[in-house]
Image 1 (cartoon, rainbow, N blue to C red):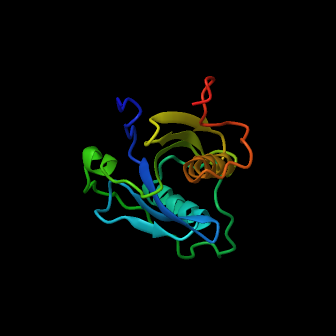
Image 2: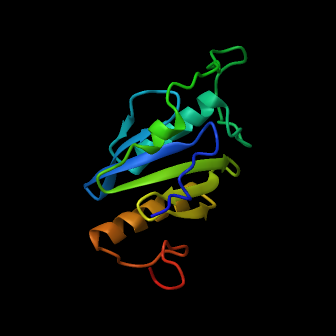
Image 3: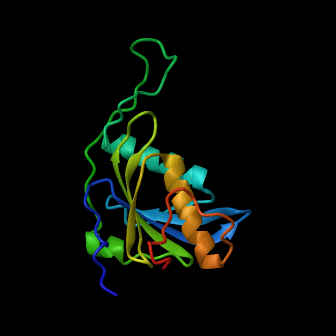
Length: 164
């Protein structure tokens, strides 16, 4: 199979590796170019919060809304520092999960959500998502397909017109 969709395309791209389903939630790790080790997650909520932290530390993509804070003026604010790439794209793309592997490319953080592209590496298919929720549903749909538990087809599906 030709790997035409296997590319990262930006400084904030990550490879999400799902190894198992625990209590109905995907568990695994994700990799990015700024750490040699993967970042573990026990469910998608934890993965989203950790990814949001990565994007905040990179300040990319820049959020169009800011977090609300109740700190006094001049209070402690987290400073953004320049991050150095420690892993090459080829090495990132060589990481794989036991159940599924996804390349996530968040292009925008608008309306307090994410918009971008997700590639299911095992199927070499890429779809666009308009929100974090839609991205989570695409991951769940792919994992349901792998485990043979398809209950329903989401609005946007990994299946093409031929049903493959």
